[in-house]
Each structure stands twice: as structure tokens, then as C-alpha cells.
Image (cartoon, rainbow, N blue to C red; front, side):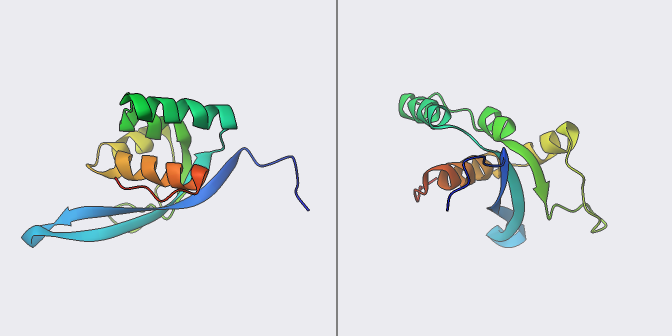
Length: 113
């Protein structure tokens, strides 16, 4: 059975390789809460991708509406807000990782970033 009334958001894992000392990367993961799009939204996104008009920051900002498993320095959960979202998006590689996780979740496609 399929329930036609879908939730307007859904949770999806995001993994990011964060540069660390010694020329290595450490994988950071969290659960993003994405705004559910429509077929029209996905078609518009693909048009922007095909034309090269993708701005990872703007795209991530428009679809990331919450999260889980994001903690601060002391290990305490960081509550999602516009300010905390901007802090996360300013960390190199995070906007791209969020964008590609969203694309994978929306299309089921495996993408190279």
C-alpha cells in the first residue's frame, strides 16, 4: 500500500571527508532532514545541473531544513537553526556533500562529486 500524503520532509545520511593533519581525511556523518521536492523541483534541479548553474551553498541551503547527530565542541547536540546551518555550510566540503546526498536521495542515482 502507498500512502499518497507524504511527509514534507525526510531524513537521509550525509557523509563528508574532512581534512585532518598529515594529509588524511576523517569521515564525518550526520542525518540531514531534507525538504521533499516534487518531480518539477527535480526537473528544475537537473536543468541547473546540466547548464552548470549549480551553486552548492544555495542548493544545500534550500533543501536542508533540519538535522540529527550534529554536535558541538563539548559533544552536546547542536540544535538546527538558520545560524547553525550557515556555520555548517561554511565548513569546506559540507555544502557539496549535502547537495550530492540530496540528489542521491531524490533520484536514487549514484553520482560522482
